[in-house]
Length: 113
Image 1 (cartoon, one colour):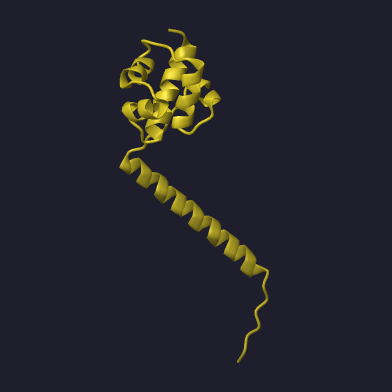
Image 2 (image 1 turned 180 degrees about the horizontal axis):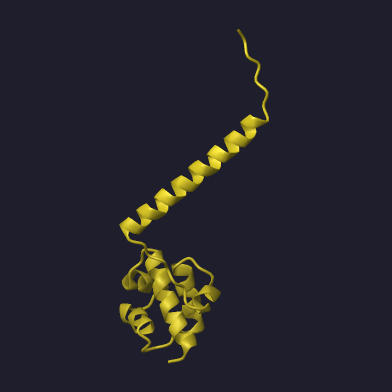
């Protein structure tokens, strides 16, 4: 199997899962057997051009995206997400504080007695 074929298989699986579809659902949409989609994803068979376009339509991506270098999804654990969220909150807070203080230093306030 070439790296080109491996990329296609990995991208097809990625986009299918991202669309929330099972192999059976993609097969039904593409009007082929469940085994056909399974065989394509396992590298046993190669899809026809017509089937490539049907698969792309089923998973809502342009057909060319199925041939791009392998798509990788970054998965973070819950604790990693919390760390990112906390750091983002701190960064936003600091940026707002700086913007407000810079704005206020240029404003002249009248004091009333």
